[in-house]
Amino acid sequence: MKINSNTLYIVLYFLMFTVHFGVFQWLQKGHEAIFIRYYMFLTLLFVMVITVLSIMKRMYPTYIGFGFLGMVMVKMTGLFLVMNQLDLSSVPNYKLHFAAPYLLTLVLETLYAVKLIKDVDHGASSKDEKNQ
Image (cartoon, rainbow, N blue to C red; front, side, top):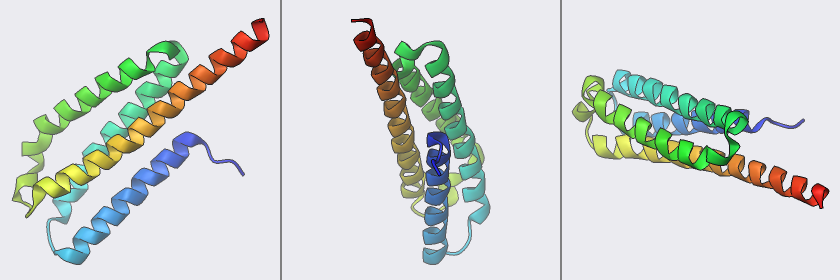
């Protein structure tokens, strides 16, 4: 049974969420509602980035890297605009709890973008070999 790459990245994301939430619960009590809201917004942004990159692969396969850079900028801007509404600063060591999930999702998005770029390059190189 082969797992779709999109499914793999989404499963890894939710595994990261579970581990982070479990570690935070083990270390401290409270602030669950804040983390749930933060992860809901982070999940929305993660799915948005994966979806936009998948659409870009179909429509503009040579511009996946530019799309990734733009989506990272949109994601960062969105998080900083919504950070006050999430009330993340009330959590002790909130910078650590803000940065760790953000950076891990950024790593997953980067790996996904690299995979898409490799797929496009591999497809282009195999077409070039057939034409020669």
